[in-house]
Length: 450
Image 1 (tube, rainbow, N blue to C red):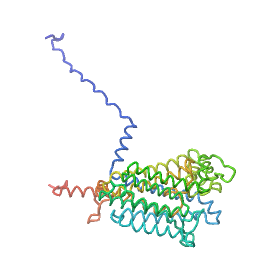
Image 2 (cartoon, one colour):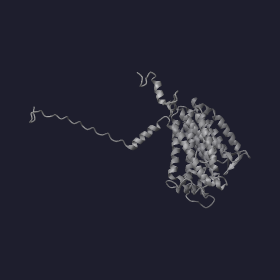
Image 3 (cartoon, one colour):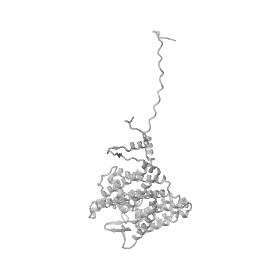
Image 4 (tube, rainbow, N blue to C red):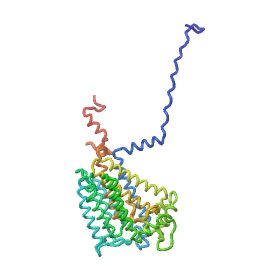
């Protein structure tokens, strides 16, 4: 063995350990997407999205109704907050209906299907009785309730078709009858055509389109074959074309599709063009809440059918995209509720409500953007109108109730702990989580015991 000059053996140095390679850093975007997926897969996500999204849309709608309706109210020699106060009253009543519907069991919802359908048909027929029905903007589909309050029964016809159609299809599915086309169509399609006939007697083409969309949504969820679905769609398209062709007002609305400036003649496209002007002048962040110029008599129906245009002018692109995002989240949550349930009634009803709200929002926003003809339908939960707000909020309560009925959501709600603990006998409080652990380990001692 070799030695150093001092005679001592050389010092053996320990071999260096190989440096482990650093783990690659995660992509922030991928991490964000992964967290979003995990959050979306939680049992209560659909419940919170439906509840929070609908409330945000309603509150924002109240703000925009107050802003968009002030000038119209003053022109009618009314208080500037006249339409806002009526909409606020309808929202309060609708909130009560939403709470009641969200707490009702599914069996009770099914039991109410036939009474709601019978009541809607009766009221819709009562509208056509001379001296009882009231005509508004050329459409006779209103009932006078006394004073300045009116009711549009066709809005409740949407809710009636959803509940009754879902109950009918669920019972037929339980009996395995939906494999036959006659059981799939009868009596669902004749009843829907009866409602459509009562609506079209008053000249309300927009509500008829929404009702048709609900019918197609129910048939799609029931698994209608492509040939049957295409046949019903062709018949509805043919009837719609005939109704449009035989009406000068509807032909005028169709002629204004894509118009960018007012025209001379019997069809001036004034409303469609000024809706585009309002959106174009808003920019990214808008002119400010209450600072719209188009609502000063230039834009008709600023607080009802064209409230989205005033939103774009005052809140800009950021405001309109926020509204679109809320409706998209609400629709996606409704699809999730319908797709994750084992109850056929819940699936049909949730799908029908989602089709109703989504189709109506697309038709209204498409008309404001100039992409679709003006159909005269309000933006759900957003536009002024108590007759449209009340059944829509009840339908939102249905979605909330169905989201709560999911087994995983029910378990998550049962395990949810309150923020504050229970009160002890001596008056002090102990966290609920500590009490839960004590119940799980009754033999455990406190830290001071020996």
